[in-house]
Image (cartoon, rainbow, N blue to C red; front, side, top):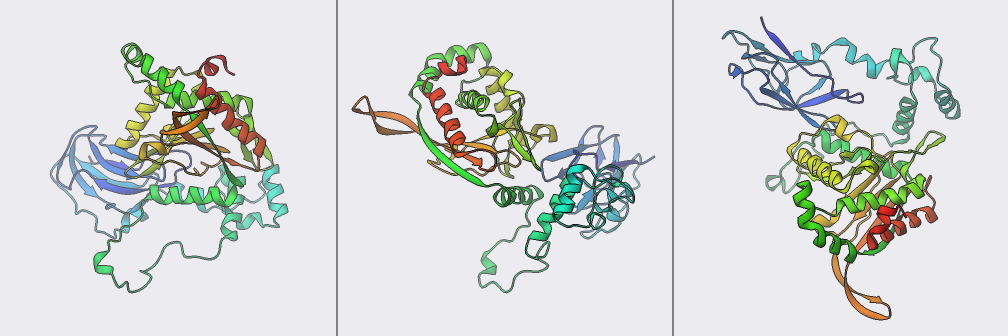
Length: 405
């Protein structure tokens, strides 16, 4: 009896995936729980393992093709009888995708269904026909996200979904390489552009003297590592300092939801990680409850998972504030882009020795430029500057972190 290989549920907001690669060829032996195929979504890359031992009997969806959640990818057979592998433009796989996946995207507002107050307000203010907007809510209901997506789509200048053909003859085509954008790269591009189009984004700058942090790391380095089994890095200091500032200025830890401001009384701090596939932002959950050692262990673990392509949807979901460290690449100063729907992102940079005036004397100090990009719709300039100053104060006098000052 054949065992189907299907696309599992990959997260509430994930509707489809791309087959990145098959680890086995048709006819090859497959062991129980052995990785069979790698799927790429707009958030993570996941491996699908075999649910039974046997022989890979059929590949219905080749590498590079898109599939809906629940679609049939192939099958595992008990014996040696195998089917032909799918060709580059295999259409049957799309036809066999289960019916329930499509209506979630293409359905219209159900007849007689009552609109939620926030949705009704958006529809009336923008003079829209709710029946003409694709509904993705439960039982065919129109959500606020559906209306906002429709408005954003109508506001854009008409453009094809994807280039149907190359733009024209390229004089240096023989010396160029054309590679299709991955789903993750396209999602990154969409979110970054969304941040620029939606938020009133500004950046404020300051600089911090890292002398005290460097001294603390040097003084406690060996003891800390022996006790906790992890190095005392910079990230724990920046996470803790940010939380002190966010508690005092909660708007920078909040978001705009329609006509409401959502103030979050928890601190899920996203830590941006660069990978070969693109930038991802895994989240440190309830970072205010974590010790320095727990922050270092968790952030190191998430960073490794990111580089190995092992992050899950749960690792990336949510986040109330983000920290991005361009300094690891040598960046001296930058303006980080917001991670929607968050209203603040802190940019760390390279530590560089510079002459500064201390008590009327010129001294050489390890200095770092800090940048805070913020959504001016919710965070005022005074608040943004104050957040950055409070982070600076905590780093220049780490005892403030322990005293929450």
